Length: 380
Image: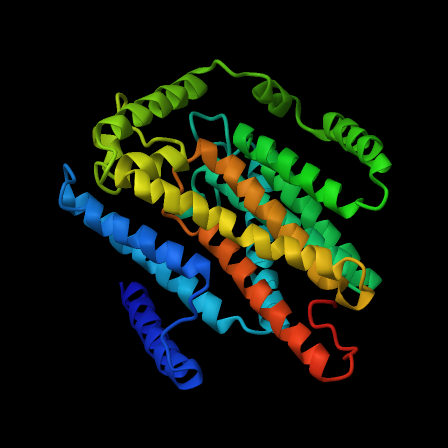
């Protein structure tokens, strides 16, 4: 009890310090890139959905939790101003991801399975209790681990980051998540396409080699699950997908209220689709804001990718921008099979993209004003 209360007061104190510092530095509460405006619009649609909700209390609780995510997003966008801070944040979350992966692999090895004795669950519980949600998180972390590996100047660091990336893949595999596998495949294909841009004739051989390695080392049960598309789980998800589209068609303006779709489900389940979750629960405008929010970072990331590719001194930005594009695409694919629209997954990735864009632009301005600096904080 005392731990939860102390967390609240620490968070409140942090928010107050942030607001005072932000006002002192920029004379405003937050920077206003397009992504911030879109998330505020999405938050507003959440408020509008509450009065018409079948159970307003559920909508209020969901809105409060989402508000926390939005506040963290805004704090990240404004506070992570340097490469060193961004890299430290990535390393911390990769450490946490490694802990999750080690526990997941170990549980699978020991046969400690949940969900009717068929699949592992996350060691921490909460957000990661569901193996599909755990897989979604790991898919978004895989490109970041590779970005740090490619951007590192030291062999030992490269080996460590590549090892982390392989551990993340193992973690995704033992979740037996079909959506996670599809998202990892598409995110990896995008990474390969961008990383071998000067010799794309290598793309097919490399992809074929990776597929062969996967077939050789993946557990037999995993391959069997990937080939199954008409089991009870898949059929139930498809049923709720259709049902959520129907609910949206009947409540297109304000939706049925945040976290209220479950009351309209045929099986008392969530939508299992982030896109229809937003549309059914908050309305058409919210769905537009949500999709635009995910798409907004791509323009800036592609600009960084194109400008930094030819300059070896700026190559770390190329890897980071490429990785975040793959993370975004991975989330967009995986979230088609999970009700995660109000959770932090996509908001952290978009925040990383906004921070990288601001850091890159600031670095370019400094380079124009001063001689090149040999210190490359994103490299290790």
